[in-house]
Image (cartoon, rainbow, N blue to C red; front, side):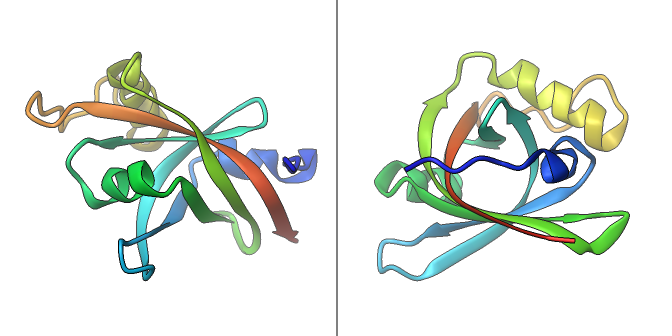
Length: 132
């Protein structure tokens, strides 16, 4: 059953806060990486490059956990466990440019690499926990 991200903590996802995303390796062990994060309605959205470990893990097992600290108050955070609802390359280059504007203050993501196509993952929260 889907969980709702409370209004009280949506600003953490919308703000300039890094998320730590946990995915599962083939042997079941966790793999964690920091990512830029966004929100679309009730979905958590992040962008990565094909060929990295994270997409390989998510393509095999769509379960994901993430935590995001409020940069202004690290004792305030949101933790989400969910499942990938959508993976798409459509609009992924434009999305990484929007995230670069949010996180770096630049109009275009400076590390575009045509050899590593971008992909967007949209995650449906199944469990949400907040603090602060």
